[in-house]
Amino acid sequence: MSLTVKFWGVRGSLPSSPSPYDWTNHIEGLLRGFFNAGLREPNQVTKYIESLGTAHLGGYGAATTCVEVRSAKNRIIIDGGSGIRSLSEQIMSGKAGASKGPFHIFMTHFHWDHIIGLPFFVPHFVPGVQVHYYAVQEDLEKLIRGVFLRPYFPVAFESLAAKIHFHVIEPREPLQLDDMTITPYKLDHPDACWGYRVECNKKVYSHCVDTEGTRVSREEMGADLPLYQKIDLMYFDAQYTFPELAEKANWGHSASQVGLDIAFREGVKHLLFAHHDPGASIQQVQELKRQTLEYYDWRLNTAKENNETLSAVQWDFAYEGLTLKL
Ligand SMILES: [Zn+2]
Ligand SMILES: [Zn+2]
Image 1 (cartoon, rainbow, N blue to C red):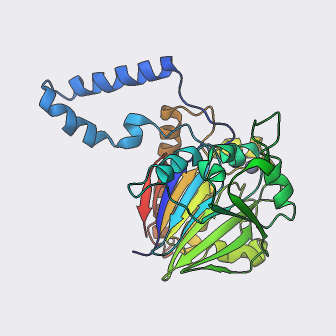
Image 2: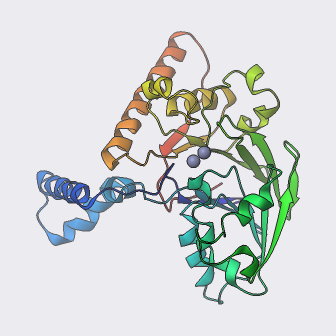
Image 3: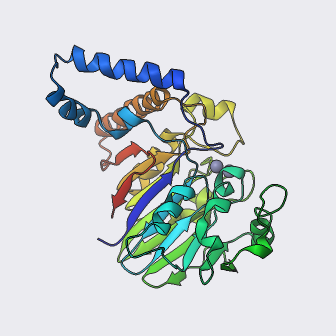
Protein backbone atom coordinates (compact mmCIF):
# COMPACT_ATOMS: atom_id res chain seq x y z
CA MET A 1 0.00 0.00 0.00
CA SER A 2 1.43 3.32 -1.06
CA LEU A 3 -1.36 5.87 -0.96
CA THR A 4 -4.61 6.13 0.98
CA VAL A 5 -7.13 8.62 -0.36
CA LYS A 6 -10.06 9.79 1.74
CA PHE A 7 -12.85 11.93 0.30
CA TRP A 8 -14.06 14.27 3.06
CA GLY A 9 -16.32 16.30 0.74
CA VAL A 10 -17.49 15.41 -2.76
CA ARG A 11 -20.27 17.92 -3.53
CA GLY A 12 -19.84 20.90 -5.82
CA SER A 13 -20.73 24.57 -5.77
CA LEU A 14 -22.42 24.75 -2.35
CA PRO A 15 -22.81 22.44 0.67
CA SER A 16 -26.28 20.92 0.39
CA SER A 17 -28.16 17.91 1.62
CA PRO A 18 -31.57 16.44 0.80
CA SER A 19 -34.40 18.14 2.72
CA PRO A 20 -36.22 16.45 5.65
CA TYR A 21 -39.08 15.67 3.22
CA ASP A 22 -36.65 14.05 0.77
CA TRP A 23 -35.16 11.96 3.59
CA THR A 24 -38.64 10.91 4.73
CA ASN A 25 -39.49 9.71 1.21
CA HIS A 26 -36.11 8.00 0.92
CA ILE A 27 -36.54 6.15 4.23
CA GLU A 28 -40.08 5.12 3.24
CA GLY A 29 -38.62 3.65 0.04
CA LEU A 30 -35.99 1.73 2.00
CA LEU A 31 -38.59 0.33 4.43
CA ARG A 32 -40.81 -0.73 1.54
CA GLY A 33 -37.75 -2.37 -0.05
CA PHE A 34 -37.18 -4.39 3.13
CA PHE A 35 -40.70 -5.79 3.15
CA ASN A 36 -40.90 -6.21 -0.64
CA ALA A 37 -37.80 -8.39 -0.40
CA GLY A 38 -39.84 -10.74 1.79
CA LEU A 39 -37.89 -9.81 4.92
CA ARG A 40 -39.76 -9.57 8.23
CA GLU A 41 -37.40 -10.10 11.17
CA PRO A 42 -35.21 -7.55 13.06
CA ASN A 43 -32.20 -9.85 12.64
CA GLN A 44 -32.55 -9.48 8.84
CA VAL A 45 -32.03 -5.69 8.99
CA THR A 46 -28.20 -5.75 8.98
CA LYS A 47 -28.11 -8.11 6.00
CA TYR A 48 -30.58 -5.88 4.11
CA ILE A 49 -28.51 -2.76 4.87
CA GLU A 50 -25.30 -4.46 3.75
CA SER A 51 -26.95 -5.52 0.48
CA LEU A 52 -27.76 -1.89 -0.42
CA GLY A 53 -24.39 -0.15 0.01
CA THR A 54 -23.51 3.06 1.83
CA ALA A 55 -24.46 5.64 -0.82
CA HIS A 56 -27.79 3.96 -1.65
CA LEU A 57 -28.72 4.18 2.03
CA GLY A 58 -27.08 7.34 3.28
CA GLY A 59 -26.63 9.36 0.11
CA TYR A 60 -23.53 11.08 -1.22
CA GLY A 61 -22.98 13.66 1.51
CA ALA A 62 -23.41 17.40 1.91
CA ALA A 63 -19.83 18.66 2.22
CA THR A 64 -17.87 20.31 -0.60
CA THR A 65 -14.45 19.34 -1.93
CA CYS A 66 -11.76 18.21 0.45
CA VAL A 67 -9.52 15.22 -0.25
CA GLU A 68 -6.84 13.78 2.03
CA VAL A 69 -3.97 11.81 0.48
CA ARG A 70 -1.74 9.86 2.87
CA SER A 71 1.44 7.89 2.37
CA ALA A 72 3.62 6.09 4.94
CA LYS A 73 5.48 9.33 5.74
CA ASN A 74 3.30 12.18 4.61
CA ARG A 75 -0.18 13.61 4.34
CA ILE A 76 -1.51 16.30 2.03
CA ILE A 77 -4.96 17.91 1.89
CA ILE A 78 -6.36 19.05 -1.46
CA ASP A 79 -8.77 21.99 -1.11
CA GLY A 80 -10.60 23.35 1.91
CA GLY A 81 -14.29 22.88 1.09
CA SER A 82 -16.68 22.28 3.97
CA GLY A 83 -15.45 18.66 4.16
CA ILE A 84 -12.24 19.86 5.84
CA ARG A 85 -14.22 20.48 9.06
CA SER A 86 -14.68 16.72 9.64
CA LEU A 87 -11.01 16.09 8.85
CA SER A 88 -10.11 18.81 11.35
CA GLU A 89 -12.25 17.09 13.99
CA GLN A 90 -10.40 13.83 13.41
CA ILE A 91 -7.02 15.60 13.62
CA MET A 92 -7.94 17.34 16.89
CA SER A 93 -9.38 14.22 18.56
CA GLY A 94 -6.55 11.78 17.89
CA LYS A 95 -5.86 9.15 20.54
CA ALA A 96 -2.38 10.58 21.10
CA GLY A 97 -3.84 14.08 21.43
CA ALA A 98 -4.26 16.69 18.72
CA SER A 99 -1.84 16.34 15.84
CA LYS A 100 0.67 19.19 15.58
CA GLY A 101 1.13 18.63 11.86
CA PRO A 102 2.77 20.03 9.85
CA PHE A 103 -0.22 20.31 7.53
CA HIS A 104 0.17 20.68 3.77
CA ILE A 105 -2.87 22.15 2.00
CA PHE A 106 -2.82 22.23 -1.83
CA MET A 107 -5.34 24.56 -3.44
CA THR A 108 -6.76 23.87 -6.92
CA HIS A 109 -8.47 27.29 -7.13
CA PHE A 110 -10.39 29.68 -4.91
CA HIS A 111 -14.08 29.33 -5.74
CA TRP A 112 -16.26 29.36 -2.59
CA ASP A 113 -16.88 25.62 -2.50
CA HIS A 114 -13.12 24.99 -2.26
CA ILE A 115 -12.31 27.50 0.51
CA ILE A 116 -15.48 27.66 2.61
CA GLY A 117 -14.22 25.14 5.20
CA LEU A 118 -10.79 26.70 5.77
CA PRO A 119 -11.83 28.92 8.74
CA PHE A 120 -13.07 25.73 10.45
CA PHE A 121 -9.74 23.90 10.16
CA VAL A 122 -8.90 24.12 13.87
CA PRO A 123 -5.09 23.62 13.60
CA HIS A 124 -5.01 27.26 12.38
CA PHE A 125 -5.78 28.32 15.96
CA VAL A 126 -3.27 26.07 17.76
CA PRO A 127 0.07 27.59 18.87
CA GLY A 128 3.12 25.73 17.58
CA VAL A 129 1.31 24.25 14.56
CA GLN A 130 2.74 24.81 11.06
CA VAL A 131 0.27 25.07 8.18
CA HIS A 132 1.70 25.18 4.65
CA TYR A 133 -0.40 26.36 1.73
CA TYR A 134 0.54 25.56 -1.87
CA ALA A 135 -0.92 26.84 -5.16
CA VAL A 136 0.14 27.81 -8.63
CA GLN A 137 -1.83 31.07 -8.35
CA GLU A 138 0.62 33.87 -7.56
CA ASP A 139 -1.76 35.69 -5.22
CA LEU A 140 -2.10 32.64 -2.94
CA GLU A 141 -1.25 34.56 0.25
CA LYS A 142 -3.67 37.39 -0.49
CA LEU A 143 -6.46 34.94 -1.30
CA ILE A 144 -6.03 32.88 1.90
CA ARG A 145 -5.73 36.03 4.04
CA GLY A 146 -9.03 37.11 2.48
CA VAL A 147 -10.75 34.02 3.90
CA PHE A 148 -9.97 35.18 7.46
CA LEU A 149 -11.34 38.66 7.01
CA ARG A 150 -13.71 40.50 9.32
CA PRO A 151 -16.68 40.88 9.18
CA TYR A 152 -16.95 37.70 7.06
CA PHE A 153 -15.19 35.71 9.79
CA PRO A 154 -14.56 36.92 13.37
CA VAL A 155 -10.88 35.90 13.60
CA ALA A 156 -8.53 37.98 11.47
CA PHE A 157 -5.59 36.28 9.74
CA GLU A 158 -3.11 38.18 11.96
CA SER A 159 -4.68 36.57 15.07
CA LEU A 160 -4.14 32.96 13.96
CA ALA A 161 -1.95 31.15 16.50
CA ALA A 162 -0.43 28.70 14.01
CA LYS A 163 2.46 29.66 11.77
CA ILE A 164 1.15 29.87 8.20
CA HIS A 165 3.51 29.44 5.25
CA PHE A 166 2.76 30.11 1.60
CA HIS A 167 4.38 28.34 -1.33
CA VAL A 168 3.65 29.48 -4.89
CA ILE A 169 4.56 26.44 -6.97
CA GLU A 170 5.57 26.07 -10.59
CA PRO A 171 3.11 24.64 -13.12
CA ARG A 172 4.00 21.10 -14.20
CA GLU A 173 7.10 21.01 -11.93
CA PRO A 174 7.24 18.06 -9.51
CA LEU A 175 7.42 18.93 -5.82
CA GLN A 176 8.88 16.36 -3.40
CA LEU A 177 7.39 16.11 0.10
CA ASP A 178 9.00 13.15 1.91
CA ASP A 179 7.96 10.06 -0.05
CA MET A 180 5.32 11.89 -2.14
CA THR A 181 5.74 13.67 -5.49
CA ILE A 182 3.07 16.25 -6.30
CA THR A 183 2.80 17.93 -9.72
CA PRO A 184 0.21 20.57 -10.71
CA TYR A 185 -1.40 20.43 -14.17
CA LYS A 186 -3.96 22.80 -15.61
CA LEU A 187 -7.64 21.84 -15.71
CA ASP A 188 -10.39 23.38 -17.87
CA HIS A 189 -12.23 25.88 -15.65
CA PRO A 190 -13.34 29.55 -15.97
CA ASP A 191 -10.92 30.83 -13.29
CA ALA A 192 -7.57 29.04 -13.58
CA CYS A 193 -7.77 25.73 -11.71
CA TRP A 194 -4.91 23.28 -11.19
CA GLY A 195 -5.28 19.53 -10.77
CA TYR A 196 -2.64 17.44 -9.02
CA ARG A 197 -0.82 14.25 -9.88
CA VAL A 198 0.27 12.63 -6.61
CA GLU A 199 2.77 9.76 -6.75
CA CYS A 200 4.30 7.46 -4.16
CA ASN A 201 5.99 4.08 -4.72
CA LYS A 202 4.77 3.95 -8.35
CA LYS A 203 1.11 4.44 -7.32
CA VAL A 204 -0.58 7.51 -8.77
CA TYR A 205 -3.63 9.53 -7.73
CA SER A 206 -4.92 12.15 -10.20
CA HIS A 207 -7.14 14.98 -8.92
CA CYS A 208 -9.26 16.47 -11.74
CA VAL A 209 -11.90 18.62 -9.99
CA ASP A 210 -13.04 21.24 -11.11
CA THR A 211 -12.79 20.70 -14.84
CA GLU A 212 -15.01 20.83 -17.91
CA GLY A 213 -12.77 18.47 -19.86
CA THR A 214 -12.95 20.63 -22.98
CA ARG A 215 -9.50 19.54 -24.15
CA VAL A 216 -10.11 15.95 -25.12
CA SER A 217 -7.44 14.83 -27.59
CA ARG A 218 -3.83 14.23 -26.55
CA GLU A 219 -2.82 17.16 -28.77
CA GLU A 220 -5.24 19.50 -27.01
CA MET A 221 -4.15 18.32 -23.56
CA GLY A 222 -0.55 18.99 -24.58
CA ALA A 223 1.69 19.65 -21.57
CA ASP A 224 -1.12 18.62 -19.19
CA LEU A 225 -1.39 15.07 -20.58
CA PRO A 226 0.60 13.47 -17.68
CA LEU A 227 -2.35 14.26 -15.39
CA TYR A 228 -4.27 11.51 -17.22
CA GLN A 229 -1.57 8.93 -17.96
CA LYS A 230 -0.44 5.89 -15.92
CA ILE A 231 -3.06 6.65 -13.28
CA ASP A 232 -4.26 4.20 -10.62
CA LEU A 233 -7.10 6.40 -9.37
CA MET A 234 -8.55 9.43 -11.16
CA TYR A 235 -11.00 11.76 -9.39
CA PHE A 236 -13.05 13.46 -12.10
CA ASP A 237 -15.69 16.22 -12.26
CA ALA A 238 -19.07 14.77 -13.31
CA GLN A 239 -21.54 17.38 -12.10
CA TYR A 240 -23.68 17.23 -15.25
CA THR A 241 -25.46 14.75 -17.48
CA PHE A 242 -24.08 14.53 -21.01
CA PRO A 243 -26.89 16.72 -22.53
CA GLU A 244 -26.48 19.29 -19.71
CA LEU A 245 -22.82 19.61 -20.64
CA ALA A 246 -23.82 21.22 -23.94
CA GLU A 247 -26.37 23.54 -22.25
CA LYS A 248 -23.83 24.63 -19.63
CA ALA A 249 -20.82 25.23 -21.85
CA ASN A 250 -18.07 27.26 -20.13
CA TRP A 251 -19.50 26.60 -16.62
CA GLY A 252 -16.36 24.60 -15.89
CA HIS A 253 -17.80 21.18 -15.04
CA SER A 254 -17.95 17.90 -16.90
CA ALA A 255 -19.84 14.63 -17.30
CA SER A 256 -18.89 11.03 -16.54
CA GLN A 257 -18.84 10.10 -20.24
CA VAL A 258 -15.98 12.57 -20.84
CA GLY A 259 -14.01 11.05 -17.95
CA LEU A 260 -14.65 7.51 -19.22
CA ASP A 261 -13.39 8.37 -22.71
CA ILE A 262 -10.14 9.69 -21.23
CA ALA A 263 -9.85 6.68 -18.91
CA PHE A 264 -10.39 4.14 -21.73
CA ARG A 265 -7.85 5.84 -23.98
CA GLU A 266 -5.17 6.32 -21.32
CA GLY A 267 -5.72 3.06 -19.42
CA VAL A 268 -6.77 4.67 -16.11
CA LYS A 269 -7.45 1.79 -13.72
CA HIS A 270 -10.02 3.31 -11.38
CA LEU A 271 -12.22 6.34 -11.93
CA LEU A 272 -14.26 8.15 -9.33
CA PHE A 273 -16.83 10.81 -10.27
CA ALA A 274 -17.57 13.82 -8.04
CA HIS A 275 -18.53 17.50 -7.70
CA HIS A 276 -22.17 16.40 -7.43
CA ASP A 277 -24.62 19.18 -8.17
CA PRO A 278 -25.97 20.91 -5.03
CA GLY A 279 -29.48 20.14 -6.32
CA ALA A 280 -28.79 16.45 -7.01
CA SER A 281 -30.82 14.07 -4.83
CA ILE A 282 -29.67 10.51 -4.07
CA GLN A 283 -31.97 9.32 -6.88
CA GLN A 284 -30.52 11.84 -9.35
CA VAL A 285 -26.94 10.73 -8.68
CA GLN A 286 -28.14 7.14 -9.11
CA GLU A 287 -29.71 8.14 -12.43
CA LEU A 288 -26.30 9.58 -13.47
CA LYS A 289 -24.83 6.21 -12.48
CA ARG A 290 -27.37 4.37 -14.66
CA GLN A 291 -26.56 6.62 -17.66
CA THR A 292 -22.83 6.10 -17.05
CA LEU A 293 -23.27 2.31 -17.02
CA GLU A 294 -25.25 2.51 -20.26
CA TYR A 295 -22.44 4.48 -21.91
CA TYR A 296 -19.76 2.20 -20.43
CA ASP A 297 -21.42 -0.95 -21.80
CA TRP A 298 -22.07 0.67 -25.20
CA ARG A 299 -18.42 1.74 -25.43
CA LEU A 300 -17.12 -1.78 -24.61
CA ASN A 301 -19.54 -3.43 -27.07
CA THR A 302 -18.65 -1.00 -29.88
CA ALA A 303 -14.96 -1.68 -29.26
CA LYS A 304 -15.58 -5.44 -29.50
CA GLU A 305 -17.44 -5.04 -32.82
CA ASN A 306 -14.54 -2.96 -34.20
CA ASN A 307 -11.84 -5.32 -32.86
CA GLU A 308 -10.54 -2.45 -30.74
CA THR A 309 -8.72 -3.44 -27.55
CA LEU A 310 -10.22 -1.69 -24.56
CA SER A 311 -9.34 -2.51 -20.96
CA ALA A 312 -12.10 -2.49 -18.37
CA VAL A 313 -12.20 0.57 -16.10
CA GLN A 314 -13.44 0.30 -12.53
CA TRP A 315 -15.66 3.33 -11.83
CA ASP A 316 -18.15 4.72 -9.34
CA PHE A 317 -19.60 7.95 -7.97
CA ALA A 318 -17.79 9.22 -4.86
CA TYR A 319 -19.57 9.65 -1.55
CA GLU A 320 -18.45 11.55 1.53
CA GLY A 321 -16.15 9.53 3.77
CA LEU A 322 -15.17 7.01 1.10
CA THR A 323 -11.58 5.81 1.59
CA LEU A 324 -9.57 3.99 -1.07
CA LYS A 325 -6.12 2.41 -0.82
CA LEU A 326 -3.80 2.28 -3.82
ZN1 LIG B 1 -16.05 23.53 -7.31
ZN1 LIG C 1 -14.66 26.05 -9.42
